[in-house]
Image (cartoon, rainbow over all chains, first blue to last red; front, side, top):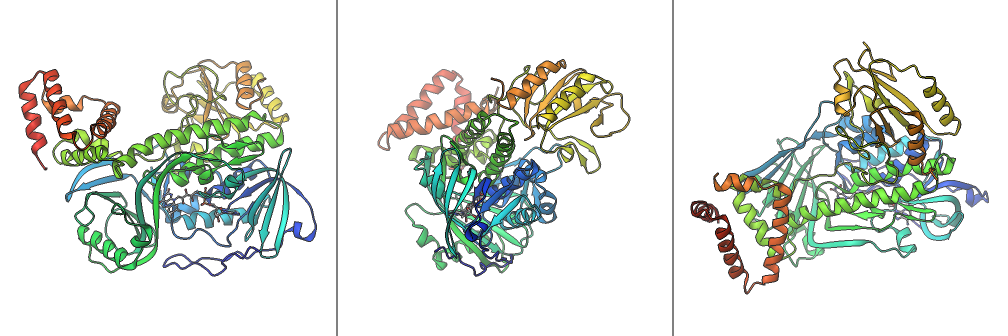
Length: 559
Length: 66
Ligand SMILES: Cc1cc2nc3c(=O)[nH]c(=O)nc-3n(C[C@H](O)[C@H](O)[C@H](O)COP(=O)(O)OP(=O)(O)OC[C@H]3O[C@@H](n4cnc5c(N)ncnc54)[C@H](O)[C@@H]3O)c2cc1C
């Protein structure tokens, strides 16, 4: 019998709410076949359920616990994550408390040896980074799910076994009132780094585990420093190791520090060691404010991915699919991109407007993204926690040079999660871009007016973006739109025109050609974006046959 | 061109490759030979660079902040 811990977790700033288990219809003898079962109500499972609902796809979300994440865990959300969260309706809520930022500082021997600002484009609604504790993100997603009649959130329900994965799936679940089995057409495993679904299928991740262990500690303290990333290398109190500091909302600071080689997590979490080291770090920065510990944990850097995110009717997303080092805020941010990539494809497959191979393209695109991230994260990890004598010497030499030789700055690898460009996606077609975003890359947001941006208008649909002097009056366009909509394909047309005075969605005025320039478009150009806001084709001249063909390719229906 | 601006002329991606290759070569040389290896490497690069002044400047720069 599954008995989830139903006492609210302790926290100095967050009030945990218990979502009691409620018996499922299946436990009263009602059998339903759910279109989608999602295991895990972490950020990724919840975002996926909301995204599916945008297309009208119902899902049941199964969560072993009865409350949100213990401790802050993921605290940094990128612009791309905010754009994805905007689509599922929680970005505004997050922005009420989130701390936006963009600068990273590397400090060595008391000197700031490298400072980098992540680029910010005034056409973007969101700053490069936003700090907010994961509990809040989860809470907002849960509240949004509760508003959504297509989503059934089942707390206190633990996935035990995958009974079937053939022309449907069947799951064995355990609850405070005993076990039951649940039938669904599809299963999405968003059950986190230890993914029981992954173990059930006997799947192995490939990649590397790094030796360095980090303590993550959240403390309540009043520090008058801006929201920026602070990385301290080789501090006197922790020689040879790295310490990170991040400001969180609600009067909390995150300290991450590397453990001396050979020390076990248990030793590191001994109060004496923990308090002494946190104090030593604060002393070094010159802060003598009182503080209290809120939460702590030990984290080891791993860079691994499943080689395939699809196993017949089971799909993997988020930490269940990959485990990424925390350097560069990749965990949750990468998972949100998974969910956004998967949602429209699964919806299209279920509703019949997309082919089955779309789901293979999910795996292709996102495994590719994970591998690219692992490659990049590997560099940061080798710098932060050198794995061998050679790498340690190189790191130390770089630190020493950094005091007088700016050329080594980029070697500090202040890289963060970014949206992956699906350049080699099987869904791409059309002409090559000379300028502007490449085919496969995410769309570029555009500021249309005060607090009015292009992405605010986008929903879960394909968008054909036409650039012209004035709106095209082409009957073929409307016919194409009607035909696609009859087949259930969400498809919209946006026209960006130089000869317009005012924006009147879906007509956008571009008198000075600013939008066209951003997109590398000329009069007559056409761009096609997928429902997840990635470009899948572009043409220098609109040709409706080619547009239709590109949509079929992007829907995995070309043959 | 000074030593520093030459070094900066190296693209970041190239610098990163050199970083990894050098780290791995040091590991291959092993702790018993890493100093010998590094000294040989500097002499080889000095000979390639062919600019005595630049090499002497680099030696001074490397001596800083040890
Ligand atoms: C200690 C720690 C610190 C972290 N710090 C950072 C950080 O600073 N920055 C960062 O970007 N990322 C961080 N991460 C990673 C980040 O939290 C994850 O990347 C993110 O939560 C992934 O979301 P997810 O939804 O894929 O998985 P999770 O958030 O792990 O959600 C998985 C869900 O599945 C549920 N579940 C598991 N098994 C079952 C089952 N059998 N049946 C039903 N439900 C089940 C779990 O209860 C959980 O709710 C940290 C993670 C940890 C553990």
